[in-house]
Image (cartoon, rainbow, N blue to C red; front, side):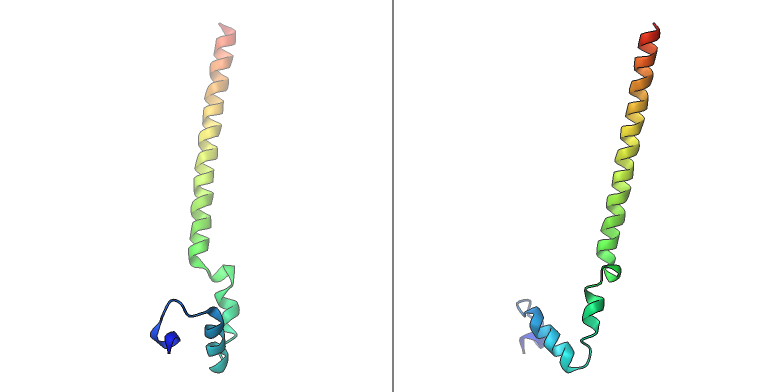
Length: 75
């Protein structure tokens, strides 16, 4: 009854049993599949973009620093 009411305290085992009873227990593998987790994939993409931006910024700062050192040593 708690499962059907959508109560958040229902254990995962109850859901697994209910899926097994209706012959949909194979769907559990898809549920746990990282490829099917669009939220996690989007988070990974956001983190990769942020990392790329941070690396580009650091690389740019290093190039500017090297130019300043080079110009300073020539003077």
